[in-house]
Length: 333
Image (tube, rainbow, N blue to C red; front, side, top):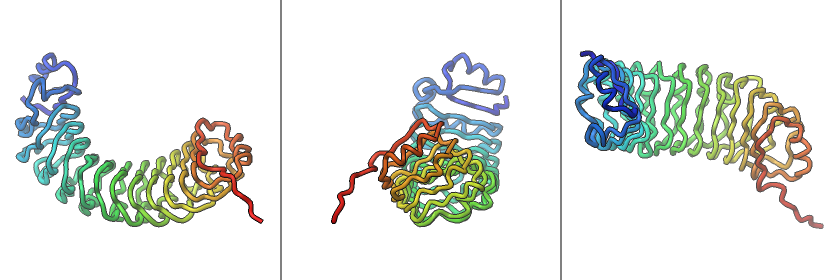
């Protein structure tokens, strides 16, 4: 029997086990730790040399990922949404050299991201959101030519963000939000011609927006909320033709509110809240036809009537947040 795919997770365990004899198992969203295996991951599954797809996600597994792995044909490994602990197996790329998708997210892994993950030369998707990973990003990850998706959110990663990620020309989505990264965001986006989504919210980034980011023709979603970024908000709308979502809230940007944002013709959701952006809403917002959601809370706006007179021209606007503005000022003589 040559089993090439195992997905442990549906609702008809016994009815589908017979399909194993045909060489394929599809079992998704089952609590197999109660119904089939013990609480630990079944080590036998990690010795199937012809196995190509192994999906053990969303079960009740606890304990450790087996250290002794022999899966030379494996391309897809998903053991997310369990209760696994320990450090990430640094030999996983040696045991599964053709690995393309590795999803260990929503477990309880701790320690540093292994440098040896840089040996997964075929890796395309890497998901390690785990809450407890620490340290910096291994530079070897920045040399994986096929990487298109990186999920590292909700960890305790720290240090600066290496400009080496600019070498990942196939990168489609990069999410490093809710970590402890610091320093400036590298000006290294010019070669990321396939990048659609970049989220670095809730970190400690400082400094100005890098020009290669604010001139990106491919990015559709940009989230830098809750950092310590400074300077003016400069967005090149003539270049950022795909931009639909922009969140610059909760930083230290200073004004004024950019008056060219209406020319970002796809931009529908805009958050500039909790920045010092001055007292006036640009008159050009009257032309902001694509805008559906806008938050300008705590940005220093003064004249409510003037702001509403402008915003009433935004005919597609459905969500408007203007809290903590328009405070009365006592005049002095």
